[in-house]
Image (cartoon, rainbow, N blue to C red; front, side, top):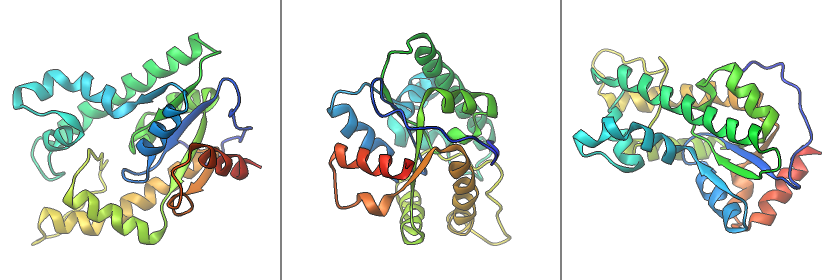
Length: 224
């Protein structure tokens, strides 16, 4: 996981424009990636690439889509979770490496990258390559919005790498453990997101707009 002593740089919002959106599931990474793609900037959705790489494992069980990946991984107390968490992370690392190689080979190429919430577990070497190639924007949720993220995960699970943060207590159901431990996971990731990102934009600031140019204005403002 990335450390705290990282150097900031100016945002690459011109030509080529290279933005990587960072944050927990549900903070709007995919939404804003799509909005920027509508303006003509090429986009990569890491979840989609990871799902394609996992297809040989997902297919036999009839799993498909991001929710299918979550169902395949299962709750973090399931006997196969640790193995499948590791398989997911391996494909995520391959995906990020693939994207970065494409950018390194084509310095003139623009890109908006919709990362996963677990990209911070890809290892310092890959993350430093990511910082060199792209301006990383952390979409940060307020305390109130974090509660919504927990409820969303409980009701509509997306793939989550717990990395040991799921710590059940005697007598708890899996859902009860998730509700208790998810805030700690969010807090731990918040520190890593902030250390990795070049700038932080509050999700609350973006709720009133869906305009890609206004999103970019907020990014530029944070980079000043």
